[in-house]
Length: 308
Image 1 (cartoon, rainbow, N blue to C red):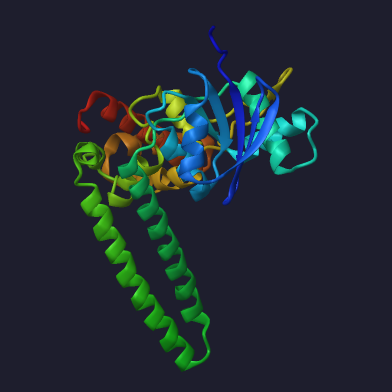
Image 2: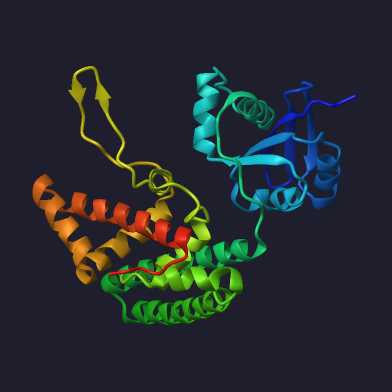
């Protein structure tokens, strides 16, 4: 007898996994620990689909355990899940309710399945995140130095900034060493061949946009939040705006676009034309950012460096 694949929603917290199986209608709770999770996954029918929210470090154990199981799974934006819950009339919010909503999404919603857990990329993501945290703290301290009225306060702030500088250099050295791994080295060389893409942008794209090089131009622009979205109704034609997507990736590509406009004639010409036509310089920069990302996507897809 063939057992039907299960459609499972999982709400993840630091200590627990609240699970709801839409196929059987059975809820359960597991400890967020490797042993219990592996036993649960091993008992699932082949072809089962699991849906859970992206919960930062709390879903790491589950994603590690899913490696090599052959099970399909999707890791969704919590805002998207909450919108779906409101659509279904689920206004209350508990872990059990969230698990049931996720199971409903597994039954009927359309979403892209998650890639397998990659230890090297996850390590790069962690280092990239830590660098961003340190750079943010340093920026705050710089602002405080400019307004601190007391000399001893300023000296303390400067000592802390010097410490942060050292930590940032150490993290960047770890990132540079990790990017020498065979799985990253060729990609970095291709990305850096385009003037304007510096080490931070290359690291951001590899860490936070692993789909780069495997999707269409429209899909990769949408993932980064650089695809202009329609706002039309009847005869009304609204202004197109970008929104959503992966904000950190978008910021990195935007900064790379500013550099590319200065360094590469074709991007400068595009920027000048669109900025003049729209009357808004930022619109020109965003258009170049989208073109830049699409170009990088094609470069990685074909395995070829940038041709000026």
